[in-house]
Length: 405
Ligand SMILES: Cc1ncc(COP(=O)(O)O)c(C=O)c1O
Image (cartoon, rainbow, N blue to C red):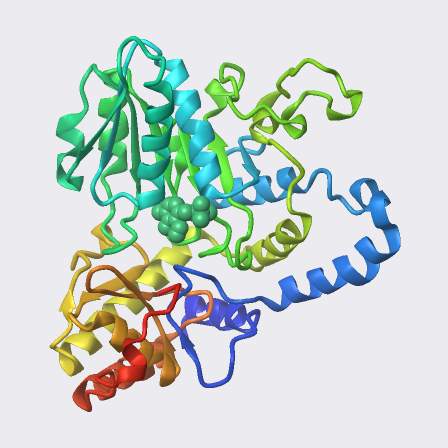
C-alpha cells in the first residue's frame, strides 16, 4: 500500500455506501458521509428541537454560510472571506453575471461556449431578454465552440463565462490562457467550478478569475440540493453592487433599515435566509477533506481514471471514449458514447454500478478517490463488460425514461 492508497482507504470509511454498490456518480450527487448524518441528527435532536430560534445565535447558524464558505475557499485556492455558501449555482450565476455586466457597462457581449451547462446559458439568456427591454444598445450572448473561446475574446466582450470541466465529456478548458486574454482586453471572467471543485487542484486566486460559482452536492458531498457557493476576487469585493438585494446581504440585517446597504465583503452576495440543514450537512461533509490536499486527490483521480479507461478498452471496446485521452485535459469523470446509453446506465444500476446518462448518447462515470479504489474500478469494468456482452441493457424496463437521468 502506498501512502496515498492508505490515506484514501481511510476516507472511504467516512462514507455510508450501500453494500454491493460501486458508486461512479459522485460527479452528479456525492454519497452520504457518516459525518453528515451525525450532524443532521444533532441539528434535529439538539439544536433545532431544543434551542428553537436561539439556534441562530447559539448553534452557529447565522454564520454558517461563512463557515462553510471558508472551508470551500481552502479547497479551491481562495482566501478566507472570498467565498460564501448560499443559494443554488443557477442563482449565483445570476448574481455574478449581473455584477460583471455592470462593471463593464459600456460593453454588450457575454461570451460562452456550446459545451457550457445549459443553466449557465439560460441564466444569460434571461438576463439579456430582461435588459434588452430597455437597453438602447442590445446585449447578446455569443456562443462559440469550446475550442473557439480564446479566439473569440475581443474588446466587445463584457464577460467570458465558461465551465472549467465540461459536464458531458470531462474536457478541461485552458482557463489560465482564457483569463489572461480576457484581462488584456478588459473582459470580466466567470468560472463555473461545478465539475472542478473537489476534483481538480483549483487555484482560483492564482488564475485571477473575477468570479466563480460551484455546487455543494457533487464532489463536496453536501447532499441533494446542498447549497452552492460563490467566489468573488478580493480586489472586486468592495466594487461590486449586488442585484439581488436581500436582507441577509444587508450590512446590518437586524437594524431593519428601510434602505438597502450592502454588507462589507462577500456577505453582500447573501440574499435571504439560508437553508441551515443543507449547510450543516455540507459543513460536516467538508470535514472529511481534513488532512487531504487536492493535489493528492488529483493524482489518485488520474491513476484510477487511467485504469478505468484501460480496463474498458480491453473488455468493452464497443464503448467509444468521449473524454480526452490526455489526463491533463480531463476532469474527474470518464465518459463514453453509446447509442443506447440510457438503457445501458439503467441496466448497470440494476447490477450495482451507478453512473449516469446525458443527452444524446453520453454515459458518464465519475472517478472519485475519496471513496473509490482499484478494486472498485476493476469490478465496475467487469460488470460493464458483462452487461454489454450479454446485451442486458436491451430490455424494455431499462428504456423507460425517468425524470432524472
Ligand atoms: C456545470 C454546472 N453548472 C450549473 C449547474 C446547476 O446547478 P444548480 O442546480 O445548483 O443551479 C450544474 C448542475 O449539475 C452543473 O453541472
